[in-house]
Length: 118
Length: 118
DNA sequence: AAGATATATAGATGGATATAAATATATTGT
DNA sequence: ACAATATATTTATATCCATCTATATATCTT
Image (cartoon, rainbow over the protein chains, first blue to last red):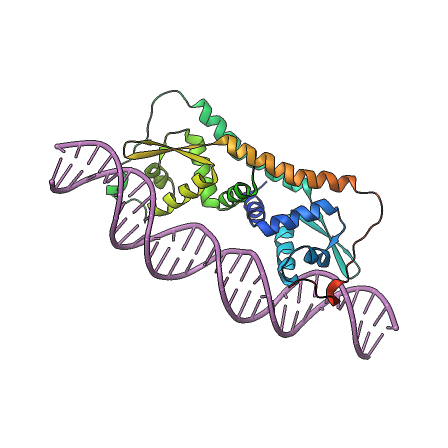
């Protein structure tokens, strides 16, 4: 999974409302259309539509148009991929950390004088 | 894991810079102090300090003060707990979805006329 | 105690974004 | 074709937040 999608998913999941919407979609299978979701939350239809777009752009949700309705379905595999990527990135780091427990090589820094960054 | 921490972690991970900082902390074991992190990124010290606070508040990082320094360590268990909670919430939903594949109970909605929500 | 260094906090600012109202687009039914 | 319904988009607004500068606090060194 590329960094771009990784971050888009992270951001999509970070908003509580949007995550709840995703949860509801996942719970409902492919049975929820936009209007049904609007009924579940105290927000305007435009807001739900916006969140659905974010979720879709992140790849977490896919759309099945059916007449004038658009039914949403959670792409659980994509969430799984995200979790795996998260585990991979942080997991590698954490593993490396527990390995490097050996010598006392404290990195104490002084640079401030040099003014390195702009 | 309570919803509060769940969302705080999600938000902490959602900012790319902050996630990178977490990665670096995890990679370094408990060897990184604030100044060392500042050296790794083109942002001001105050910004790093802010991100460290967010990560700490989310429980993803813990502090070991040592003299004038404060060394940061990644709490990988907490990240693991978050991942498990994410899997639990979405996983349950996704599982339920694949189970409920049975009858054609489309929820098509009409409510608009009633003007239910505020 | 005084200066230097490390980190945190306060305040300000620009940019992102969640939300809403209004409008546009598409589809269905008559 | 027209009215009604469903969803998306546009535009505006208010809030949040990443970032900065400046300052405060704490610790170390001499």
